[in-house]
Length: 386
Ligand code: SF4
Image 1: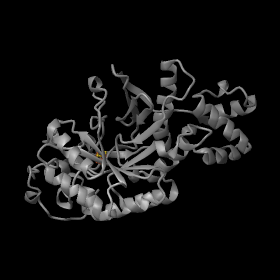
Image 2: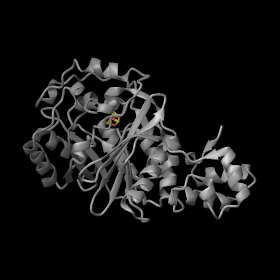
Image 3: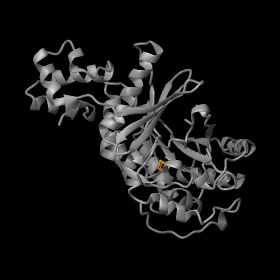
Image 4: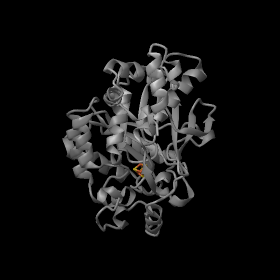
């Protein structure tokens, strides 16, 4: 059985080389060939001794997940469906903009959290991705795009963990992959340009702050606990006020001076002026000021099983105005890659649900989220089961 070198950060690769009787500088050479130059065949690593190349050829490989489908949108957005074996697939999306190129990657096959408005959450959970499967998405995308664009320059400047999965539930692998992304011998990305997005797992947010603070985005999606319990079930364990305090703690070590709150606009569910005003209070109560966070309002991409619809643009603009007038920097996420179904919430590769999350969500669908009055929502608090 060969070892996949995409599974290693530089220290891991150095330990592997040590086991082969090779010095650390060999690991650095290998790391650069693999990540900076996209070389997967040891024969092509010309400054490495032939004997070592032959040895590596028999015990190691450089193997990203295979591409099942690749779609390129007219706006330059590229979506890949990667085969991760066992009938499972995950997706990544590259979004080009004038001043940056962002790759949205997956960290798990499916997701245990089961957010109401998320198509991945409705599919259930299969397994965590390995480091090689996470970093393999970046490795493949970066080197494909360089070739596609005919450049030797870096194409991907930003990475966001906003594809399939809750990254903080696959912590060790995600942190190892982050180390590779940030390593100057690999991709050399700035900590400010790598964003981990979480549903709000407070102890792991604190842990990330200690281990490797990168930019943080939090999927908030509701202005009070009753509503968030329903939309993002992990809220039953980690309610909003405590989550806000965790965000404040994270800011002490974060590479940026704000936390981004993601807010998916759901028609008649969380999009009224009252909800916006309530959010302002939540932000104010956490810090006495509104300047420590940004809001990103996300137009919902409807899918049949959700029973939810997209907020009309007038409501989104009204919502934005209330937050902006209160001093909160607020943006509306542009939809990209519509012609290839690459927009947010449409990351839906095939998942072999091994945890019955989808059944739990289907049961919850019988509790309809009612419109303007959040008081009509069920308020039962219970332990989070994943
Ligand atoms: S929004 Fe994120 S955390 Fe929630 S179900 Fe979807 S992938 Fe999981």
